[in-house]
Length: 125
Image (cartoon, rainbow, N blue to C red; front, side, top):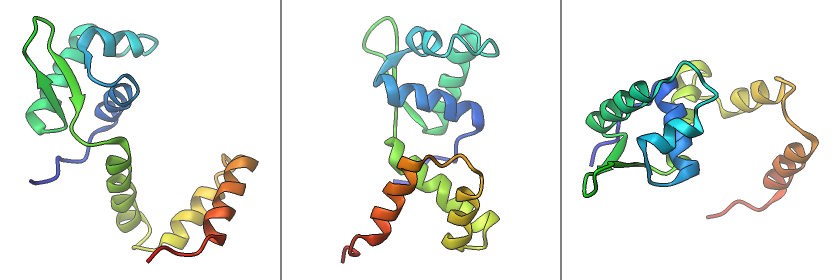
């Protein structure tokens, strides 16, 4: 099975809604994103149709309202996006990527503690 293409920014917002909701109708996805006035119901419908054609979501057509769900889990998609960013922007240097993320100033004290615990833990074989 080939990997689906990297999602666009809008597609990623729809995937995030589907990961939070689980399998959902267009209406459910639209309602979750209703604060985003850029996305109309028909816009969400069209984007989900395009995402289905691209292999980013699967569609259950067994009922009147089609139900969509992400093909890949959140973690798999995130790893792919980070890997792409790592090689495109940081020449493959994980250290540079992590340092850039830490320097953004958006890392909470709790997140720093979790990062330190991960670094202190023995490596898995």
